[in-house]
Length: 132
Ligand code: FES
Image (cartoon, rainbow, N blue to C red; front, side, top):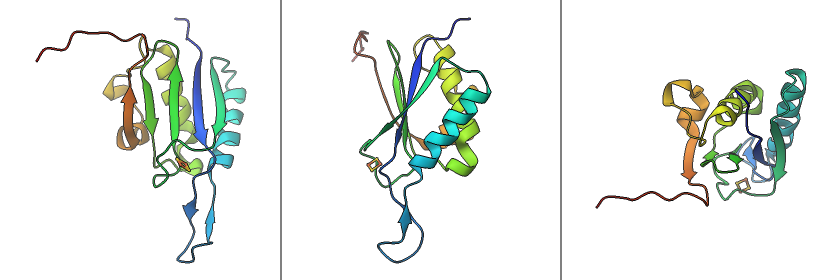
């Protein structure tokens, strides 16, 4: 199966608290971008692009990423840890890329994807009659 190109947008602005002090935080999105790129490169994956972004408007659930691709539903996923979830994010992106419309069956979603989904947004081309 040919995988359609997809993008993992990674928020690099999210602040992860490292203690009680307001100025005690890091911005783990930068590290996540590096880890995802390394895993994709090592796996020879060329269908997935990693793009840093400033904010995905889910600032209280770092790290936050969005999976997007042409004619696919876009998924917004939060609560991701660069140290433990990079492999799962890559797996989710590959499943997303292989899917017809971006909707990955529940059983095929890594745990962090299942737990962290914040929203899904239909593609601009989407049209389906909704019964009321
Ligand atoms: S700063 Fe990361 S979602 Fe807003």
